[in-house]
Image (cartoon, rainbow, N blue to C red; front, side, top):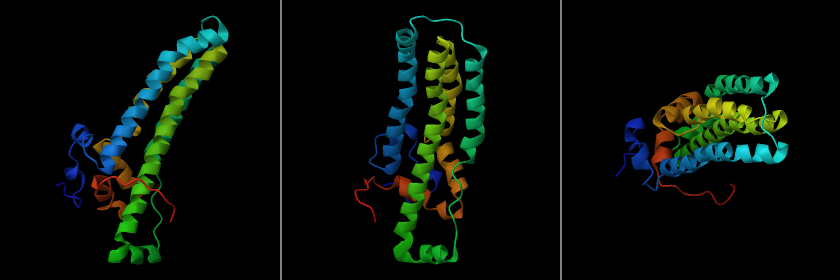
Length: 195
């Protein structure tokens, strides 16, 4: 049995969590599949560029220069996400009530998942930006450069490793302390309705 009150020490480990029915295991399986998408895009891009442009040439400097600028912007922005959860006296009073603990845990879990998917979208955007740049410049070079800059960002900022989870927990603020890991280590239950 997993200790749901534990912090990161309750994390069974990346590979072990893939075999669990926990929310953390579900997220990690999902993000492993999502992290394969930039590789697929990279593999298909030479064919897309060739079909679109009929040739592969040397890229103009501007198309290759866009990629590092995008990567630097994401490198600056991704660690700053998410913003802390808003604190209010009413919220703190609600959180302290025993019956509202589950609601606070769900709120923290949803904020974490939203931040993780936003980080993934930003980091994968660097990779995906390479494809139109490659087509515009009639060259595969911008796509290769976009993958070389973007894929490490995907792995560093969007893969739900223990370090990424802890960095996001700290960003969420004090409400996430003790609640985020409990929510992640609990059994996954898809949300079917809106409250």
